[in-house]
Length: 157
Image (cartoon, rainbow, N blue to C red; front, side, top):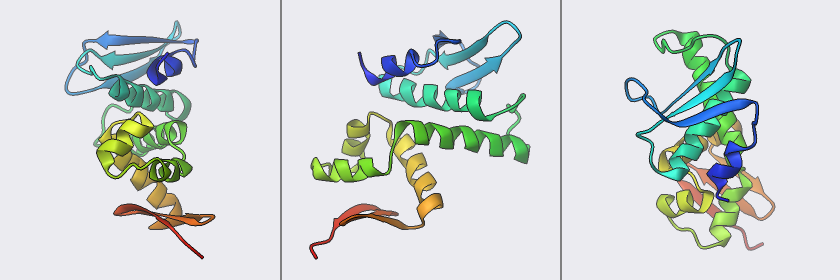
């Protein structure tokens, strides 16, 4: 079972349809009605790790947003969109995984995305998220993670 399939079964009360015809360039959509909670993933999203990222964000909408936020010209709606993205990052990536990737020999964003089973765009979202929390760097034990540009440094003291 891959990581997308594992994520699919985590919320059994939500109906997930990953072959939806969505308008615009939307990759996913969450809707809650009196009958059901539904996540739609565009049939244009073909790559499993991209589906995983979209699904995590839509779960984020389930847990963090209220009402119809499709009009992104409204500041409050953009804030709720950001909350859902942050929820997705927290669900899929731990800051310590950058150190794990460094130890595994990962040397660029493409390899990092493969290592974490997310898209390169999601890596950018995660880096922005962590930079917002920790600033430009974060130290864990003998490792310092720099978020912009992404770099992991191991001290030799």
